[in-house]
Image (tube, helix red, strand yellow):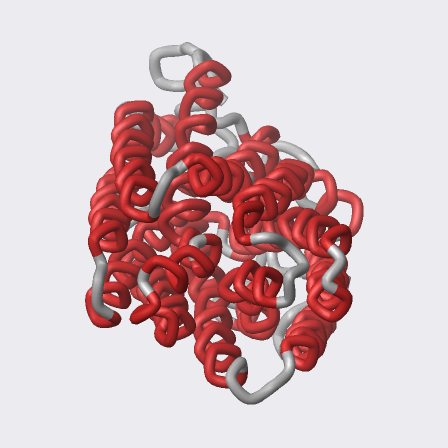
Length: 435
């Protein structure tokens, strides 16, 4: 594909794409791994330093997941046209929320601060999808999106290090606020040429420009994502330009992954929100070592960069099932640690949980790009909202049930939800084709 100036459209992209990918990964690290998931990590410290906040931790987590959904829905209408605005909103909300948590002394202030902090991730991830797609060559996009998505794991490791080294809650959250602001500025600056590149791609696709139809979408350029859904039908054949009159479903292809994401999200909420609290209460992990528990989770999550290879080998639906099964096994490991007060299953379970969760969210990104290559940001928002909706419901539900049910029983429920959500992805709504 060439531009109207005769230069290759991908000239200079590898370096720019690498910079944007790294900057996006760092933004995800702070908005997700710190501002969004930090509440669960710091739950034991919050309950210890500010006991008046202990009873609302479940509701605070639910508020955070809900605000993430609100932001992602707003991003769905914004990021495919103005992706850099989404990056700015991600930084502003994550920074303000972290500052609020640092000073929160009442339940209302904590819930409000966590609500704002949770919006950062909701703006960041959908905005980064079109940004990365605009500057990364088509064949490298699945790998680049997986690297960006693995930023959550990097952020969780960073939050664990902050927790292990900070003397108290306030300085820890102040430091995370500074990191959110800095990474948002870096991502915004690195993506400054995205608008021009997107315009150039449109211009080069005009008749007579020598461009192949479909060369700029998320599915062109190679078999990086195995199309096992039958939903990626193109309107035109890329080589001949002839019309393809097969029906291309507009909404139904997102139904199965969205429903599965809700159920798996509910199951994952137990570990994200209450995992450290349950493990410290059972004496499986000393409170002073909770940060290292989160570091283990984040280190496992770094394997999320292999999501593209997993999907290429198994296909989207089977890859999702594998991730959900791994989440169930990881939650069972946490339950075993709680029941036996032995730390080894806790660390092994959280490491596997991190790997499985990051891979699962990466599968959702690739699924969205396959179903709606022309609106990948909006489709990603839909699936991530579904995941966050399940997490909000799970956090609130487990928070209420924690007072009346044994922690092992709660874990069994979480395991069952992950398994059901994994199998649910195999259900094909009417109107979608078999592999």
